[in-house]
Length: 269
Image (cartoon, rainbow, N blue to C red; front, side):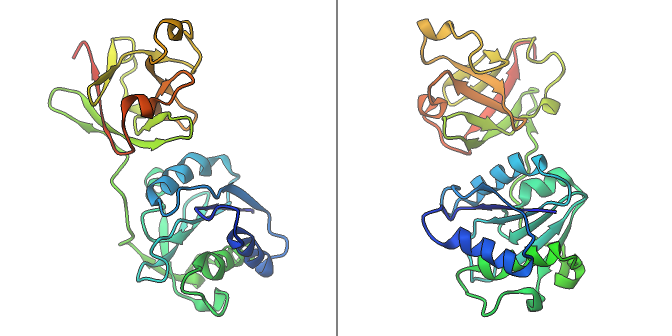
């Protein structure tokens, strides 16, 4: 078993190192891997999407500790989630919404047994004093039921599922904008009929229409010679449809931010 860490802490301060130290204090043999510590500060939605994109690349039984926690010290609960293959530890603020939706069969525990916490517990650093020690306890074989009590009223973000309009179009949204400016939607291959793209599908976003679909970013790169602002759609590595522009920021060209509505239609509807 190993532990992954995902936070908005950055690397300039001591926070990440202290979390690793707290895990190692409980289990000196722990293997710890960083997913990222560059989540935009306090951006729980970005953290949720990044965790969704990364967690299944890890071996079964990995303990994913995710801390994007602007409400640390408040009444928000610390939780542990168990699925068929993974554990997730962090705050009950929606951060695990998308992995819960994908895993479908999960148990969620409110972490209440302070026997397994680091003391004294800082009201402003649960990553070190609560979530990291719990990860160490799991590595040591402590059962989830020893760490807290089952709950069902955990916080969830809106579903990843698309909405179908009466005209047959599908309403999607921009889930994430990466550092290259690619706009990642919540559209997956299972959302599209087999021949949907071949039948002339197009994406409508604000006043823009995207009707070019590519297999990779540089396909048909000669188009950029005549239209450097050309937008296209491509299946991204996380399994979602992206709106992109060759060597340009699609988000900048579109003038959009995360959450923007995207309509997917076919010319033959």
